[in-house]
Image (tube, rainbow, N blue to C red):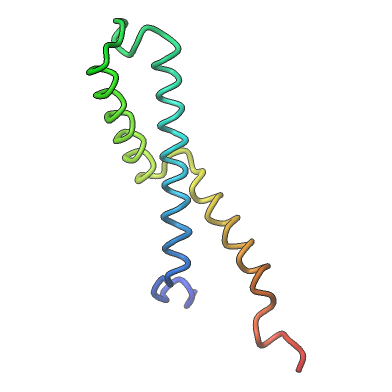
Length: 98
């Protein structure tokens, strides 16, 4: 419980940021593939200007969704990165034999 109250360290902030960025990128790619598969979001063909505008909109939507929990992937990714880092660091100093 006390660990939850501790201020986040730099590594934790990096893991959280990287996992949210990855999830936002993934959601953005999913939105883009849906748009490109059909005739566009509004049922019309895309021109260069509308494609750029929709691309920015998809990116912002993906980031907004991720900031509010998204698909839940960022938490899974962050937990995996935390486990990987703890394995690389080895056991805590208290459990090591002298």
